[in-house]
Image (cartoon, rainbow, N blue to C red; front, side, top):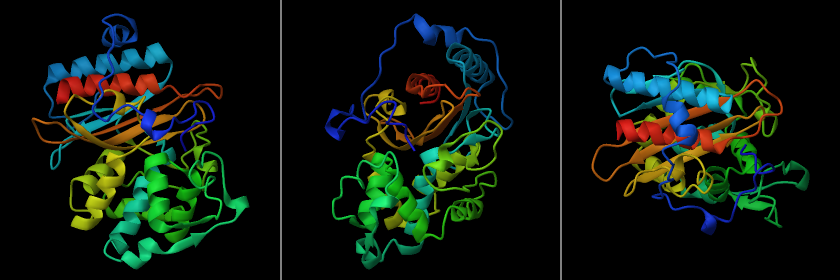
Length: 314
């Protein structure tokens, strides 16, 4: 889920444009991040060594400044990640799973209009926290297409659960991820329990490298047919929840399709593909976590990571 109980989601019209760039001063946390000590480098990184060193130092500085653990994987289609930091480490997945749930349904039903117009009736007691679209539907009767829109664009948790039900439950996410070569991704529970994010708990987790692989395959690769990929891109290009995360630092003129996630213990995630106006697309996955139950969800840390990655790799 995305923790709107801590920071309520504005109306879509209030969200920053997908091309808006967040301005940072030369001082403050960004400067502290760049001045940090070197962190763990990832294997198979083709980015120049000086770029890796600068980014490793910056990621370590962000971890120190914000008191959290950062995981990153970024790269272009058909190549190893250009950069990864803790890319193989495990992080709570939270609402990033919703992209996989919709993609799995698109894989099987992209051309079946009847499936997407099928009405799903749900009870009042099935509505869980952070479900602004489903909770507002007084008839409690939505099409699969409407549920996909709610889950991807507004991170609606009830919609996520109903979509999981159509694919046989949470375990279907891990099985689908494995078919795409992501072997460290699993979903075990439903919303909102999957966002518990207990340190060391392997349930409902993935890695930045897995998320990078999955989102790249789905949005740029051949994991979906042409119509399925177009539908997924269409929803994610209009995501309304990343205006304070990666969506805030997308370079001018670029387009961005992404999905966010957040949970307990300060977990904040954002992953997607950016299409710059003067080069090939870049897939980026950013995942964060802490060991503190009282930690707040820190969107600014994810935005700073994105600004640094875009600055070096775009």
